[in-house]
Structure formats: C-alpha cells, structure tokens
Length: 159
Image (cartoon, rainbow, N blue to C red; front, side):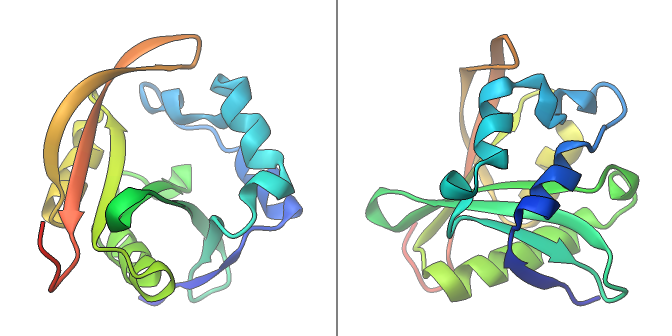
C-alpha cells in the first residue's frame, strides 16, 4: 500500500479533530486536551510540521507531526483513523511516516512518546525498531499520566 503525504489544511485539521477512539484509546481524542486541540487547529502552529496521510483510494487515514529537536533528533507524533486501529495497518503506516520524515527532515534519530497503557502502539513501535528509553509522567488531558519515551537511530547514523 502506498500513502500520500501533504501539509495539513484547516479543513483536514477540523475533520481529524472530530475523530473518536474506543476506550481506553479515547485518551487520544483531541478534544480531551484543550491545549493540544488549540495547537492542532492553529494553522500557524501546524505550519511545516503537521502532515496528513491519504491512502490509495484518496481516503484521509491519518496524520503525523514532526518536531525537530537538538542533535538531529526528530520527535514524531501521529494518529491513525479510529476505524483503522487494531487491524494490522500500524506497522506499514509508521514505516511510511518514518520514510517521509527521513526524506524531508534528515534526522539522525527518531523519537516518540506513547502512553504507557498503550501496549498495542508500543508493540508496533518496537517492531519498527524503536527502543523504550524511560518512563515519565506527562501532564495532559487534565492529569498526569505515565508515558514511555522511545527512540530509533536512523540507518547509517550512530545511536
């Protein structure tokens, strides 16, 4: 399967902001955190970092956000349409996102953060080569929750 990436428009951001996941993954509903939602809906804050993903049939299936950091680290955030989660598409989707990010940002290391309860996503990320580095508490959705910070060295780059 091939995917098409392009910069997220206001219309696409609005559409994605209405996505709702089944519990316990409703933790990822954008409306759960007003600050995250405000950033997501701000064209200025999305600029050059937020990208939507379309499948071969032209269906909006997800998004990625890329945040360049220090020492060549590129932090990745992502979302997959709720109807597609848990059906085995995650590995191909994350690989496509990493390939896109590699071509556009040229990082030495990828990093991401995932809620500690989300074993399904952690397995996908580990299959993609991410290594859990540490667990920490992140303030989001009106509380503090354990998250796992994971990294993956880019091919031909030292970790």
